[in-house]
Amino acid sequence: MYLALVATWDDVRRIALSLPDTSERMSWGTPSWRVHDKGFVWERPLRQSDLRALGDAAPTGPILGARVEHLGAKTALLESEPEVFFTTPHFDGYPAVLIRLEQIAVDELEEVIVEAWLTRAPKRLAKEWSEANLPPSDG
Image (cartoon, rainbow, N blue to C red; front, top):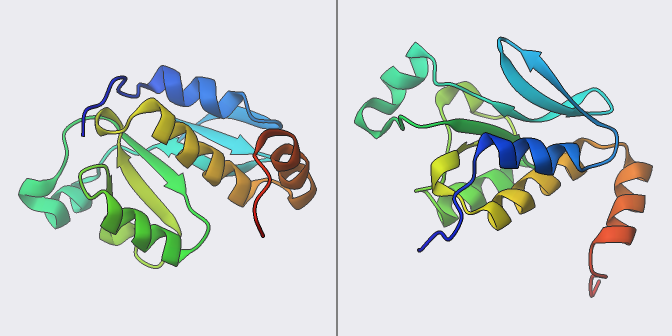
């Protein structure tokens, strides 16, 4: 897959802060983005336990953590693009994925961040934003 524009932390910040009721704050010494004080994406450097678990497969570049709707969505992302999405034992049973930021295109990053935001935003805010910004679904 050819990536015309590879994502950066500036892209993460721009996309996340463009969503309503979103703020940025430091958490464990790294930036995280929250909606209505619930985290939805965050910088997630690998810890020693992650490095041991991943071994030679451990990425070396910047890593973004992102909430997903449920464990089924997590599995689907992990299986669809293992070069972009991964996880560690720390996140077993938790609806979140880790993203190799240097491997994801900006448009795909935007989808992931918006989906993460929708899972954590208050229901009414998510509904209002979706109705104003997303194409109607056939459901």
